[in-house]
Amino acid sequence: MDLGLEGRKAVVTGGSKGLGRAIAGELAAEGCDVAICARDRAEVQQAGAELEQQGTTVFAETADVTDPEQVQRFIDEAAAALGGIDILVNNAGRAHPGTFETLTDEDWKADLDVKLFSMIRCSRAALPHLRARGGGRIININAVQARSPDPKFFATSTDRAACLAFTKTLSLELASDNILVNGINVGFVVTPQWKNIHQRRAPHLPEEEFFADLAAAEVPLGRFGRPEEVAAAVAFLAGDRAAYITGASLDVAGGMGRYL
Ligand SMILES: NC(=O)c1ccc[n+]([C@@H]2O[C@H](COP(=O)([O-])OP(=O)(O)OC[C@H]3O[C@@H](n4cnc5c(N)ncnc54)[C@H](OP(=O)(O)O)[C@@H]3O)[C@@H](O)[C@H]2O)c1
Image (cartoon, rainbow, N blue to C red; front, side, top):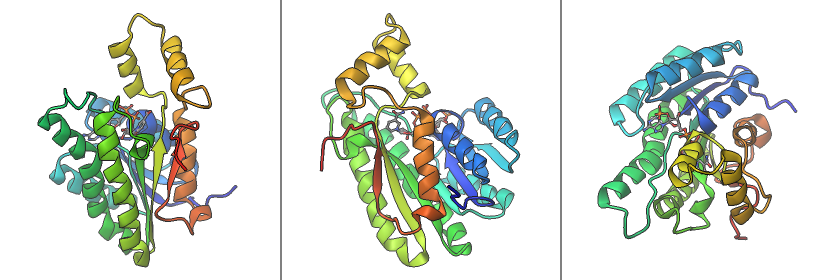
């Protein structure tokens, strides 16, 4: 299936590892020029070098999505390096674990900052560049807990619901600009983030056993997802085949999210 992505200019936040790295790789494989950011310089440069091996134009730079000035600079430099922006994938993020009783105000503010405000800032900075191209795509990487709250992921459940509302509302405001805004509700996908959770929760268990036990309890398909499975959905939503889809949030979650 030709997704029509050849020559498109894509920005992926948090593109150094995990889902963002897979998304950048998938878009590069489809012919996009890609820009990625993350905070760790060595990791973002390493990922950039690997993406260049795919034969595409790459801009890889450090930027913290919780810092408005760094976001503005990264997005403008990415647009200059690639020759514009057609696609923004808001992926950078991290979890703030804890129950209602243990989460502090600082945890809540940090969680909102890295999840909701990063989407707001990056979308705002990218908007003039998308408009200059006559339209484009914004794809927000969200979590299945946005619609299926779980106290084990308390801050995520609350703040991802706001990201869901942000995605829908932005799609309505930007439809007349031909900017399509969609989201992906991710379930459990094996990434460095989850490897850290394994180390924190059950370092005595082999990794496969930890993931298999959790999947058996929580995931109808009975396994964790792979980053490439999220990246494939992003490429579809970024491409011409999704030209009539906006304001949608697609679950890539192995059946997690027991709602209609
Ligand atoms: N994996 C899952 O099962 C799952 C489920 C639901 C939702 N998600 C969401 O999917 C996204 C990617 O998750 P992942 O599992 O791939 O995580 P990951 O393996 O920890 O990778 C996160 C990426 O984001 C970057 N990043 C983190 N904080 C950043 C910041 N403040 N500014 C810029 N870059 C930042 C990281 O690089 P640096 O640390 O160097 O900055 C890294 O490149 C996150 O938003 C996460 O909440 C994941």
